[in-house]
Amino acid sequence: MAVSAFAPASIGNVSVGFDILGAALKPIDGQILGDNVDVFDGDSEFSLEITGWFANKLPADPKSNIVYDAFVGFKEFMGKKGLPVKPVKMVLHKNLPIGSGLGSSAASIVAAVEALNAFHDYPMTKDEALFLMGSLEGKISGSVHYDNAAPCYLGGIQLMVNELDVISRKVPSFNDWYWVSCYPGIVVSTAAARSILPKEYSRADAITFARRMGVFVQASYEGDDKLAAEVLKDCIAEPYRKQLIPGFEEACAKGKELGAIASGISGSGPSIFIVMKDLKKAEELQEWLKANFIQNDNGFCNICKIDTEGTVVTKL
Ligand code: HSE
Image 1 (cartoon, helix red, strand yellow):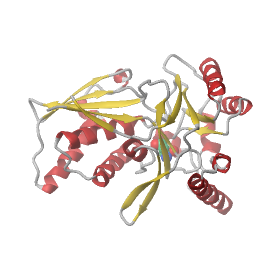
Image 2 (cartoon, rainbow, N blue to C red):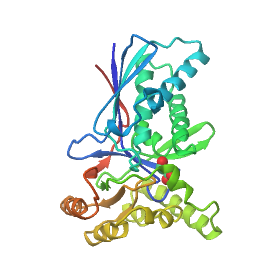
Image 3 (spheres, helix red, strand yellow):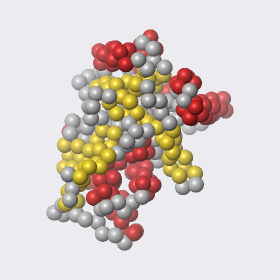
Image 4 (cartoon, rainbow, N blue to C red):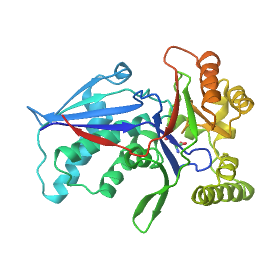
């Protein structure tokens, strides 16, 4: 038996919900925007092969890879339940760039944990798996936040709950929104992008943050996309992080000129997202971003819809 798990790219924060809102992405043209992890029967306890477009950006030692940490976390879980772990050969297809703001580390972690879970016939519940995914993500970024792991695993737009043992709940998304996602090709580490944020915020910012977040969820449930788009704004991270992203303001301004209803930084950047309702204009914006926002050959730009499936496991 062998399995493969595909975990999609995601937008952490979605501007309005720093650390508590995230959205999974799916390019409308069928391009792969996410990581895959395969699990086969192994000859030893653990081995890892890394392939994919960004494989050469990862440490050569498999035990320095987050997939190994996922294996260790999974093994600890199985140990606590008194269950055996099979010898595994894992293959990571690293398709998302590291330090891109597209939930790259979450995609590898989520795909690894879910592939191990499937390979062992699902000893973990979804909550148990998500708990492990969040703690592994915390090891990389310096703090536990599920805003990439939850949408990547469960799909859709996810709101972090963190009460009554509930990690995350889905918020309805608008089917006719096109999310133009653009990675400029440079690297911004999440830990670095977090370290430049203030430790404390004013009461005015706290109220603005809570008001917009509440309105966004309410408007999403009401199907009021005009209001939902209007409050898709960030007073927590964007004012400080935009300086790390060359051309951020020009890109948002171009989006607005072409009819964008919202825009912002994807996760901790440097990717950005711009929400459009007209596909032709979204395509025009995509071309403009390719020509003007992307900095080097590593960059790319996709027109996406919200991925409603999350992580998908297939038998090999
Ligand atoms: N919420 C996180 C941040 C997302 O903005 O730092 C990146 O992992």
